[in-house]
Length: 85
Image (tube, rainbow, N blue to C red):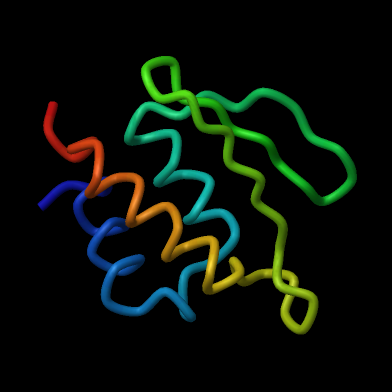
């Protein structure tokens, strides 16, 4: 099992424990490209999907990703078969 698979599994099974670095890494592993950063917000765009993702760390624990954003990324990965390839 590679890093992409491990990150995806963690995001799917335990989104509240996904770190901010891990959510950004997973997005890049499935083809999202980093566009820009504004403060703590990181913007990603996928070349084939007309969807932009905006990630920011959780306010209570800056090292963690927001749970709803992890779930949103998992849904996009599943709906667009981004784990293949």
